[in-house]
Length: 194
Image (tube, one colour):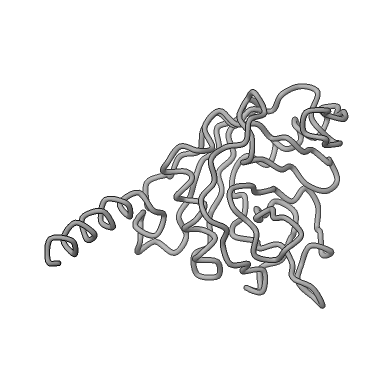
């Protein structure tokens, strides 16, 4: 029994090393850099208001799940969404769904980053979106909203370049608003703590 417990402890320890809550764990506002085909964007994440969401996001970053993925949805006056598909439009491998933190007081305003989800409130996994406008309809009210977990601090001009890209219907995804010119998320990296 003791050996089983030790084995379980070792497995849990190895499994938790790369999880987001262990990355800059004393930093409430870690920063990440999105290196895209259109330029770099720096985002300050907010663990003080959205710890579950930030730690989930950082786990994907640490595991390099966002590297060489596409922004698959562009609505120039609404959102730019990514974090779901590789360059061949195959879904990336997801971790478990997370609790919706949309009631954290942060609003879906221009240049904030939020978690995308299915219809159910607690269905967010890897996909995220940047708000390209103030989007109060995405905030919680009588229904669950979309959890904001950070804001852009550098690279706003990159969105201006992306917003002019034409979009089309993508048959493989069954999705409107797919950029005709691929917008690639080359990688996301956690910046050193300041």
